Image (cartoon, rainbow, N blue to C red; front, side, top):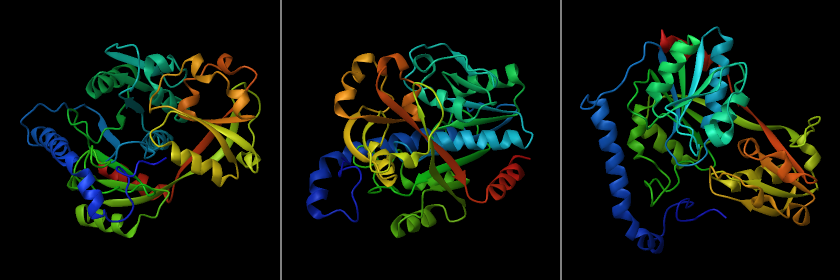
Amino acid sequence: MRAAWIWPSGRESIARRLLLSPLVPFSWMVAAGAAIDRAVHTRGWRRVAKLSGKVVSVGNLVVGGTAKTPAAAWLARSLQRRGHRVALASRGTGRRVREKVLVVSDGRFVRSRAENAGDEPMLLSAQASGVPVVVARTRELAGLRALSAFGSELLVLDDGFHHHRLYRDVDLVMIDAAVGFGNGAVLPRGPLRERMSALRFADAVGIVDGPLSEDDDAALRRHAPDVLRFDAHRRPRALRSLAGGEEASPRCLANREVGMLAAIARPEGFRATLEDLGARVVAERCFRDHHRYRARDLVGLRRDAEIWVTTEKDAVKITPSWVRGVDVRTLLIDFDVEAPAVLLDWLEARLR
């Protein structure tokens, strides 16, 4: 169920404003902290590292999934196909091992596991095969390892819009059209990580599964009138069993009763995708974002639903032996950019 206090639809009523008023001071503090952090780095009051190669950040303004990780994978893969030596850097949220630098993929082989690297780096390794993926305590360390170990000339940061300690040549911000900017307030009163005025620091904005609502579109034009805008879509491509075997069309879920297994920021979006495919979701096991699965989390799946469907982000954290005898399938999603050559040509021109 979507939390109305974070994702209200339309304008807030007076009653809702009164209900949320205790959160206003905390929201102000978070907004002020984010603004100060950005200012001390952009104005040169605190050291900002600069790599010898170019750096492109893919981030968001809203907490939770806005397809920034698939967008970063798509961008790295596309730039590599154009002849660039690219590496991906991620913070590795939820990883257990705390080495200063961890090479998750060397571009040929995946060299780590989700519990050591985090779920998003594993997803990047799967979706951008051939591109090295590095996790480090700081993006600077990740970039230095990519430069030295792989000769990378271009580093793509996953979730880097709010990471100011490393200089970025280009900042891309992804917006999920279904969520937009919520109520336009900063955490904890709303979904924003910074005030919307931070959009002026973006060089390009990607609208995912658009269009934006009229209010959100007007807000974007007001805060970032000259930003390059591009459209992108997430499309279900196939179902793959955790037990292995051939992939199946996602349309095979039509009129089937399924269970939903997810540990993502907005499981309601995943549920809507399954329902759009014609599935009837009769059971759910949802955990907090970046949850580290254990075998006990998956006990009794068979009695609740005949088929269970999970996300690619979750699948990398589930050991197949934990669900032996249960039909658990991963829904594979393609990330497509409209007019990709326009975006890539513009980006290459900015990086020259």
